[in-house]
Image (cartoon, rainbow, N blue to C red; front, side, top):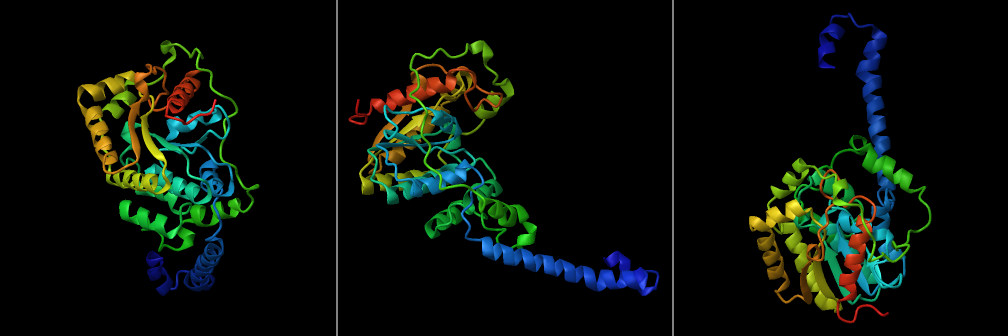
Length: 340
């Protein structure tokens, strides 16, 4: 309003407008800001139910179902959730999320699960090689993790390994209406307590997926993945270290699986040595007193040829089921894990 001051002082602006601009408008804005702050204070402890990602963080505590194997991972493994990865519904629990929640969410989910359930025999972490580093913005991690994983130890971990994740917390709630007002209000209308995901049926190991000619992954997308430096980032190293600590405390065995990767991308990583160095780095972390069974590359089982345009996720009839069957076969081969 500084540009109006000369007009006001010159008497050009009518008196009614002067009262509105100089008194009523600022008071109205202050009332709105104060009202939003009151709403924010009242909604701060509402459990968010914005999506099934939020529901999963609640389900691992509310649902009493116990699994003999727990699967963690990112979105390509999450896509297998509609299939049972074991012979029975309680053999394998798929707690995979998406890359945007990051490895921290997988650690937090497992911790919450372990506090409310008997320890599984195995924890299988199936994560894309280029997701073992922080590749998304702090703002994205804040949106998916900060208000969902709000225990003191979870918040402390996020502050340490995602610098600036709480930088916007001091802002008035009126500056962040979506996250601090609208989404908590909508969460109040959510349905009954969620349950952990369970597949509808066992995947068919003889499924015939669409031919490679139906692949949609674009060359530019594949090159984008090829150019990523494969390294276990600082946050992910901390997650692996803590998973190893949990494996010793609770007695489960920890396994890592490389999920399907487009052949062109995997071949480039192998030729330039990135894939070997990443696997060696991960194995080095697991060798430090971890109750682990090692790292398995599911791409050695077969070539997965059909991906989406971003070259990240399997697409086309049969391919997700093919991966689910191969992953289930790997899990079944772990010593003593599945009762026939």
